[in-house]
Structure formats: C-alpha cells, structure tokens
Length: 589
Image 1 (tube, rainbow, N blue to C red):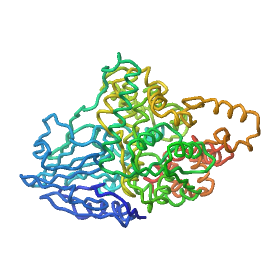
Image 2 (cartoon, one colour):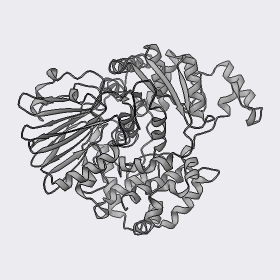
Image 3 (cartoon, rainbow, N blue to C red):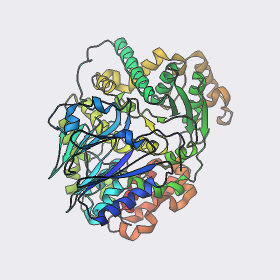
C-alpha cells in the first residue's frame, strides 16, 4: 500500500513510561502490523526522561514536534486546518497548566501531547469531539497510551478474562462503545473535549468548549439558512488553506453534496469519486451531482473480494474498538492511492449536527439508535448469550443516563450530543483514520463555530434536516433538483423530474435508463455480496474460534444469520449482528 500525495503530519503515536522491554516490544509488534503496511510512512522513536515515544506519519514529522523552553516535548497529532505556529501557542500548553481555561488554537481533528522534561508527566488536550481516540492503561511499571487500540492491548497482555461485559453488550447492541469505555476493564479512552494528565495517577477534566445552547431559538428561518451557509463556506475555506486539492467521496446524501457545491464555488481542486455497483442510488446520484457542477468524476467498482482481503488487517488496526465493518473503505483507498488529488475530504459530523441523529431510544434498553442502526436487541441477546447479563445491562443503561444528564440542554439536544460524542468519534470516525494513513484527511465540519451554531438551533429546523435542505435549495438549486438517498423525492421537484417519474411508473424496471435512471437505482448491499463471495472466510475469525465462542454464546444461532445475509434478500441487519460477534471472536483467538 502507498500514497504518493499524503500530507506531512504525525498521524499516530504510542507512549510508554518506565515499561519493560517486553511491554515495549509487544506494543511495537502490534503497531508495526498497521504502520508497516504503508511504505510511505515514517516512524521515529524518541526518549524523554522516563518516557519512550514512537510517532509516525508520511513526512515532515519534525514540524509537528516542539521543544519548549523548559525542556518539555510537545507533539501535535492529527490534521489541523491552520498552520502550526509553535511560538504563538498559549503558555498554558507549553507549561502543562491544566487549570487554565484554554482552547486548542486549531480546528480539525487534533491531539496535543506534552511530555515533561523528566518524562514523568504526560498532559494531553484533545479536540472537542475526541475525534482521534487515544487508548490508555496503566500497568505495574507505568502507563501506556496509543492511538492504536491493539498496541495497548498487546502491551498490557489483556485476555478474555479482562473483557468488560457491559462494553461487549454495547458493541453487540450498537456496534460501537460509548463514553471512555473500551473492551477491557483496565483500558480507557480519553474523553472528548478534555485535558488529561498521567503522573502518579491518571486524571482528566472536561473543557466543555462546545455545548448546546438556545442562542438561535428565536431567529428567523431565512437568517438561519444564510448563517449556516456562511459558516459552512468559511469552514471549507479554512480547510482549503491547509490543502488546496481534495479527493471527495461523493455519495447520494446531503453532506458530501454540500461540500461539492461549496468547494466548486470556492474554486477548490475537487476530484469526485463514487464506489460500489454502478446501478446503486449512491453512484447514480453522485454522477449526476458531479455533472451538474462540472467536477471531474470517476467510478470505482470494488468487486466482492474485499472482505477476504481486508478483514484481518482491519482487525489488527481497530481491534475490539467497534464491530468489524468498513473493509470496502480500505479497498477504495487502495484503488485511489495513486490519484493526483490531495487528501480525502469528508462530510464527517455534518449529518448529526444538521439533524441526522439516529433517534435515541429508551436508555434502559441500552440501545442508542433505531432499528436501522441497531444490531442485537436485548431480547435477542438474552436468547443468545450464555453468561448472566442483568448487571452488565444495568451498567450500560446507567452510563447512557449519566451522559444524557451531563450534557445539558433540551432533550433533543442531549440525544444529539449523545450521538455526536459517541457514534461519531467511536464509529464513523474510522473512515478518517483510514484516510490519514493512505493519503491524509480533511474534515471541514470539525469546526467549533459551525458546531456551536448547529447546537444552538431549535428542533424545528433540525427535523428532517430541514435547514440543510433549504441551504442547498436556496444556494444550489440545480443540485437540489437531483434525487438522493436523503429522501424519496428531490429537494426541488422540477417539471422534468415529475415527467420522468410518471414515465418510470409506466415502464418495466429494465427500461429505467437514461433520464429514468434514478427510478431504477438500487440500495447498496456491498457487504452482503462480498460475504457471499468469501463464504465463511468473510466472517473470520468466527469459524476458527467456535469452541471458545460457545462459552459465551449459542453459536448455533449464527448459521441462520449467515444464510439470511447471503440470500437473495441480502439481510443487512443479519450481517451487522455477525460483524459484532466477529469483534468478540477476534479477542478469543
């Protein structure tokens, strides 16, 4: 794997303090299985007193390292939207002052790590979303922290007895973890929007730099449309300063469509791509949007072999931090690795900020989202699992309730904040992590001014993403007339569209081509097709650890799920249930 145009940055790190050679060697072996796949990445090893540190990235690592006047070392990990200016950094960061009310001076996905001169104290500030997860644990010798979950697991030697049952249930129900939980009792992540310190003990404090408000609840709708467009434009313009050329995965949804429209207006060098079968709604609509905006566009057919190719590398990368999914992204990034376009720009976060929450359900059920997002229900788990669940389910429900009450704001804002602080960094953010390794990433909506605006809106403008739709309708009507995955009708129903719809209703599906192509498009079910092609190898390592799995669950229930996933109906929810079990299976090898 290689990427000829990746940007210079530190994209990951592992740190140890007073650790044994065996601990460091185990973590580095896990780290190498990920970083070693990319021949364009460079790794540097540093020593700061009692601390050993590995950092890696495509190039120019020194620009992201700074020695403070007192001898402490500062590292910037991630992709800031503005240039790094160490001399302008506030003194609180240089001195490790965790009591100061400061904000990171950069927008984007960033982590700032300070290691004291003697290496005995680490201080870490993360962005308001915690968009780059940092895993950490403390062993007999000292702490270990890394952006790679498997590195910490290997360093600590965790095994099945260390699994946190409530965390396992959260993955089985929701597909990902929540809060600062990990799969193991002794390991945590650094919470979003916080400053953390490791010295004699670990402690962290919430910064609350982005919180819900009622600031715009009495604003006129038209004013909100203009303000949202202005803030989104400014966010994309700021991101362009760091990277003037972008590769844009353009789907049938609203978020990448908005980036395409604003990027074109800003004269960004955009190259749009769509992946998957050519007859899917995403590919059909992506092509139409690119044509309307006169953007270079290409289609990447991923085939059906990616589960067999990428499942093991994916597991070595993300470990047990979420259910096993998204291998198609790795196939896509490999396919475009030699493109001359710049970093991959993503609509990450805009979906939820604009009102696309998966609808939080009764927390007592441990289920964060509606059935489309869900995996196993509690009732199904009671029939599946062979271990007592009651105490773990209470623990899960209590954690969800605690997050809802800690956020503040109206209940719809708490529901959205729950998803923003959990699903986004702990689940959908994996796409940007992958992009960082292949060629760099850009996340323009990781912008505090834009986020504060969205989190100050009344519910009426968020329902159905009404405000976002009106932004596109008002400023980009040509694109608003193109259908997509966001609804059953385009945002603007033109006479041409209504005529095409009437014709499509009167002809056989096979004739729905050309102007009628939108009405013949199908929903993507790539993973089901890939599983059918790979057979049971696509569920690795479930077939290899059935005996160990049988201590935890009724493995007899898995075969019917496989049959439903690969059948003509291609039951996608059945596949998600299997993918969440894969996470447990991987940790039982």
